Image (cartoon, rainbow, N blue to C red; front, side, top):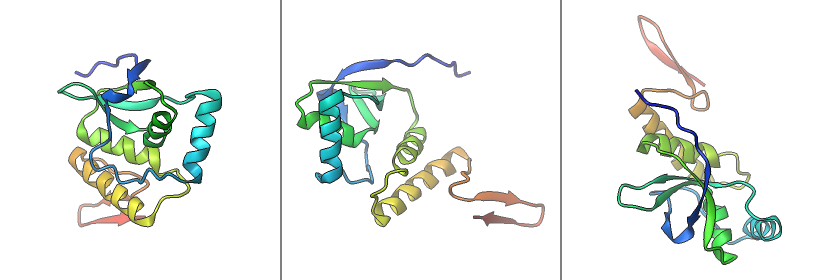
Length: 145
């Protein structure tokens, strides 16, 4: 039985945070990044990162790759992080869901992210309304989008 634990924000050294394996989204040094740097420089980190602990120590970043890069550029040593235990599949789904709302995503990035999410969901035996709802009858199954 999995017990619900209370999560809190921890101050984690930036050097202990590793980027998500196969992260499909580009962290570009562009106008959007400049706005993030300016915002964090003025008011600090409003939204903490999301990471999971690694078995070998340190943390794998799930959500907040652009905020992490902005904080690195600003010279932060520590950064606020919500640390959550997650399976590989849960981490993929959370990472994709946290990024798909962004305005400037390349179609290739979006396609790769949806593929990653679909594979993770297949492992878990779940479907998503974003990917279509699976309808099964006694004779056949179809995907409705």
